[in-house]
Length: 242
Image: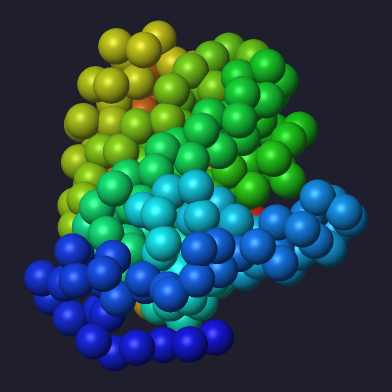
């Protein structure tokens, strides 16, 4: 992978797009030919990202170079999709960043769909895949609540707290209020650790107990609290913390 430090300087959104201009008409011609002949199996994740970018960047831009720059900056496709749009724009420009954000939104809807069709408690792999796609790439800590109906199917996934790199404010009464508004019977609490350390903090544990205490009189169950840290997930229930 190729990393150019000047691509990531603050305020370089438009300059980044200019820096991937290539002299050839189609720098991804070989990748297009390989995909046409052998399908997706013939491409690695960087190649696939380059082909996606070839449809997003302006004509003449070097999509392969742009894909390398994104992979170097964010550490892999899983963290490119889900990265904040302004951060993507610093590398590939505003228009291409908007297209990748749109694709990520579509991916989330595809992953969310089965959670609305069957109980979450029997769909842990689907839930974990969705949570990674939703939260793993975010640079700041956020707190989400998945509100569930009486069959434990997803009603809504809502962000109820946005914070810094190591803290997101959580208000148990706000969780309770929203659960009542949605007629939820249970919730799944989720937050991310941008540090990539999935270990629950003392504050995480104390906050979880406050939410459990706030919801118990309302007969709304807290099924779990999950920490997402890059590719790792930690369940409070599995750790005996709920």
